[in-house]
Image 1 (cartoon, one colour):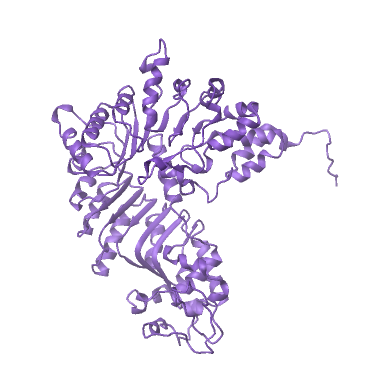
Image 2 (cartoon, helix red, strand yellow):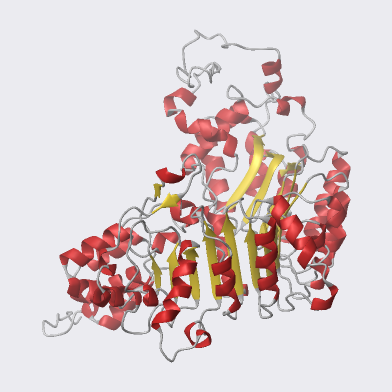
Length: 622
């Protein structure tokens, strides 16, 4: 046998830039990238290039905040210059924006730390016009208080930028900066700008500068978000400018002022002589939609993404159903008496990937058979679904849930927040996995024979099957179980004689496992209904799917912090390591689809003050 000979003269493959680059491409956490940057010079270049590039849609990979940039600039201007050449998506903001005390009691966020690199033109060019390919996007979501732009305002829009997201304070600076250009027309200056986001704060800026900016651009994407103080005349002027943007593919008007939009839209959108409205429109987000807007939906023949933040009448279901190319529907109805009408949307929009329908009522209260027929018909029509959210009050058993693996194998998000789910271990052992599912929300989940399953072997058995069926599930399926995070393991144990746990929410859920010397603690008449399976001699592991817990069991209405159901779920979530997760998965899914469809995402202002909810991982570190 030949002995392996170590070649001392050979190169270590882990210092070859090509190999290191491949490794770094597969590192997706900021702390890990920082660790890579500390290995050696070769690893540092590859890791810092990925770190400083930034991201349009993932706040985890936002470029260094203004405070960090200031530290880097002071420590080494050479290192600052080198790192800025890596930047593709520049965000100029603080890690934690401050509240502008001048505008109180109105809340307006600002950056109260100036950017040192913008004090002198030469260093400002390194930041805003870095060497190399240049910036693809520039975002300044809050006014940088006291920053002097007088000598560098012409640098505010680098020629390479396609996506610009700014506080409306900077609209005036952009128009003023044109005075610095000699021999360069407005059309040349803004020729590359295709996507414009305006965060309209309470800075006192009127709509004129914004309209001037829009009029000299050829936009494909426009997003306005902010103040509820937009007047009716301002909104009318804005919509008049936007009507002339014939190449617009995405429009997001997240303005809460109902009166302003109603008045302006009735003036602008009913004008017959102006021809078709945005013939290329693929995405429409509206904070408020009145009848004049809703009548336009079927005319947007290429519309793929529709999101309405305020409730609309269910009378417009048929209008929505005529948009046959829709991939996303995210709407709220003020009432939904005829839930069967939802089938019109499902059958009329066969390409749907997201179906999010909410309403202000209490939920579907019809016969269980009708609810089941509706659910089956919806799922059969929506086999492309990746995101399903309905706040209708369904009742599901495990067999019906697992039908989803056949009907909707692509599901990533399943949110039925008013529905309850009944499961058995026997059914889980026979089920196929939900390979893609990352979020599942129910009002409650009930397990058959919960008392016996709470034994240590039972919990481990159900956890094993649960992990197999939901390999990507990342959080608690019952968000109301958040109180379980305050419980300690000892608090959830029962003694060998089956003593019950007495939970007092008012006492902050402490002393959960207080000894009762064999007597059941605080047993009420309602709690007696929890002993549905007590006395049964059958082996719980052999329960068939047909013997699953009945959906009509009266005991299911009793699910508080003393119930078997809650304690079993709590133990299971702890074994699985689940916590309550925020909307990060849904947000990232939505942004990826927007980029795929339009080329740019809708980034809400909240993303910069709450970046974790708009990041692909739980923690971000710089």
